[in-house]
Length: 248
Ligand SMILES: NC(=O)c1ccc[n+]([C@@H]2O[C@H](COP(=O)([O-])OP(=O)(O)OC[C@H]3O[C@@H](n4cnc5c(N)ncnc54)[C@H](O)[C@@H]3O)[C@@H](O)[C@H]2O)c1
Image (cartoon, rainbow, N blue to C red; front, side):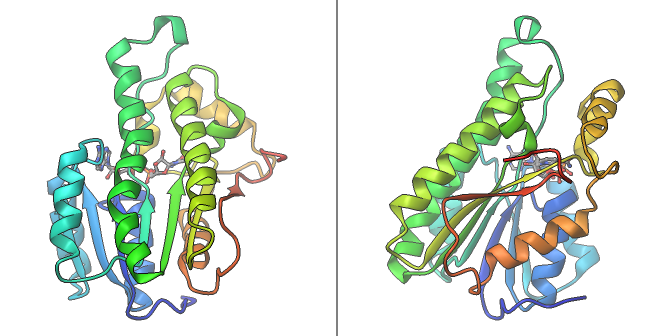
């Protein structure tokens, strides 16, 4: 496996118990990163930590949509370490429905986790990065945030919001050695696909010129470069990994 120069960095990966987040954790550990995975699912966190069995890996049970929970965890963590890398990856698609049929609470929950979760984590971690004049933040958005998917108005809006947040925050921090970027993946086979109807997933796949799902490892490669010191110029940007679906 290709290694990135991430040695002795400390990273928080939200939604790190499975899927994209867990794969990023594996690559980070392989590259010498002190890796802290956050997730709302304690059972999966314990399982992942036991399986990886690496002294550089630890976890926190955190609901990213809960500002107090995020703040307290960051305050506790920064007592003993700086946070060099933040991967805002926790997310849900929620159920799929036309906007006018959407359950209001469900719509709000999707926004709270995907968009407010990203805001909460950035708000709490950035002061530590400013203090150290070093940071790499990657916000996991989605091609849905660029194109807008039918029957996914909440998810598309939340991910578009995360893209806007990235562009603003990146500019606010551009005079420091802190990079803030977003990534926009197309569909990959993780547990998140189970939240949507089979027809919806088939429609997503039909739009991808590559004609296949994104492999999780392909996604992780992009994240690793963005999280490394080598990415010393790109910021406030959106990196597409949609297999040709998005043309901008
Ligand atoms: N897999 C895809 O097709 C795809 C495509 C585009 C974007 N994404 C994005 O990638 C990210 C990772 O998704 P994935 O495919 O690995 O899904 P996944 O369901 O495998 O993993 C998401 C993780 O986030 C956690 N999570 C959910 N709500 C949380 C909360 N409130 N606080 C903390 N953790 C929470 C879940 O418990 C889970 O472990 C998400 O932001 C998703 O929107 C995924």
